[in-house]
Image (cartoon, rainbow, N blue to C red; front, side):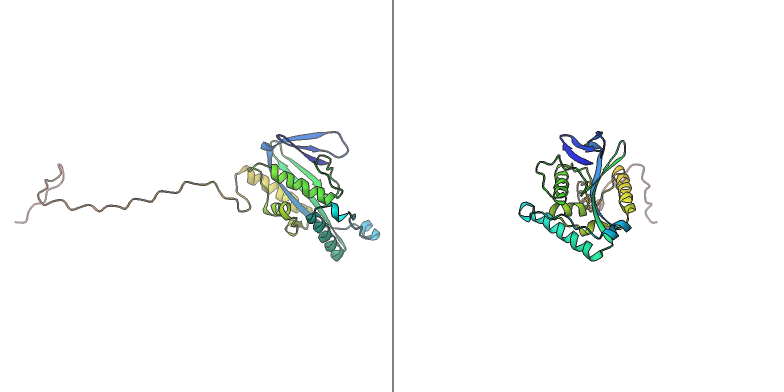
Length: 219
């Protein structure tokens, strides 16, 4: 499975079949990155943890190397859990959620493909962030990941958290709700009210208004 940028949107491919899904930017409501800290299966625990492949650090971006090192350190410390990076793209009309997992995705569409899946995943997120219209919701944690490979705010403990966020962000986009500190539509500043001018007393010789009650002078 993979995502490729197209002039008017993106094209999603499916694993194992030739089917593709063309999604115009007008349908895209949001995309976000998550890192699932899942429990290792019994087979994985028996085989022991397999470290991520080592690459020539001179050929990879520094932030991709740092990301790989920090993820490995976290997994070495936790031992029974595995970190799974994924990108979810939520579209509407009709509803579709495209999910690609960092270590299994197809990055053939990238202009400059790196030998590291993490480096390619980071490059794809940055490309989407640069091309996405302002109407597409990109959470602050995903923007931080695209800018500096900051990942700790992306951690989730259960797969259901991904699904719940996808559902929430879809409904929020449909209702026009702001997210992540996004400013609401700017309103023109209200003009200051003019001070109320007190009525001046009528001159003593002014004639009474027609129809107004007349005072009877005291006897």
